[in-house]
Length: 170
Image (cartoon, rainbow, N blue to C red; front, side, top):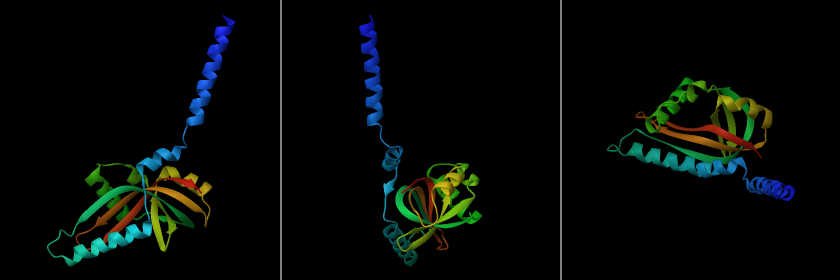
């Protein structure tokens, strides 16, 4: 009987060890949901598309899209309040594709991120603010998981907003 219990105990330990050894880092599941992107190239493409739409009087002047993107950036150390205008763009775009979500009303701050030649203000989920301040220092690199909102208004105003859904320190 002791031998059987010992075998069961060892089997259980080995099973737990194998499961833990095969466990992947948490960000790998995020990597599967968010496409890695070159921000400079993306912004150039979006601007070219906006320009082409504005030059075509027959084209609908309003368009919008959203997608999950991930990329590396550098935190400049700057924070600011999220404007109502930018919040409304996120809410409207999200509502068109997905429905309503109170997370945008809870979001109050933006951080400034350097990506290539671009300085971009990015709204950050309220729940992430404290950890971001603690983990990401001025001038340090960060890997961002964002929900991207591209919104071209009828009047020609173009918004490219990267809403920070998660991050990891590099």
